Image (cartoon, rainbow, N blue to C red; front, side, top):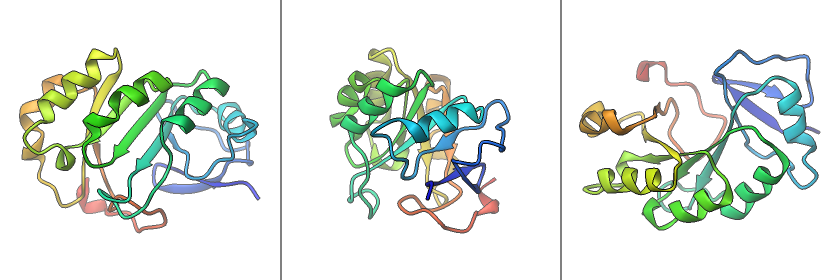
Length: 173
């Protein structure tokens, strides 16, 4: 059984290469088997132009997922840009590890960087990695207003971070 993926809020089967992607869509690797690279190759063949990797620490969100070692393994088997979404407390402690693992882009949560978001963004950029900021559904845009000029991307969460299978929260849009 192939893993389920999420594209623009809709699930699809990675093994179904009849599904084509629109330019600019990203794929979130929820549980792809990356050991031999087959699932990542399927996503590439389907037309994906970016892989989104959720990193969870069990503290900022109640689930635990991949770390720099997995990002490095994915980097070895694809040339697609890797977008690493750090849903973790104190992301500044791990930016270097993820940058060195080969990610092209790092997104941090504004809520995980109270008082030091500007410094965290500068740190990300110091590794020649593009940066983004994510907001939980209930967080106000005012948290990032002063940082917009330093961002390559803003990610507005349309579900509460931490678990798949939640209903899309259209009111965030």
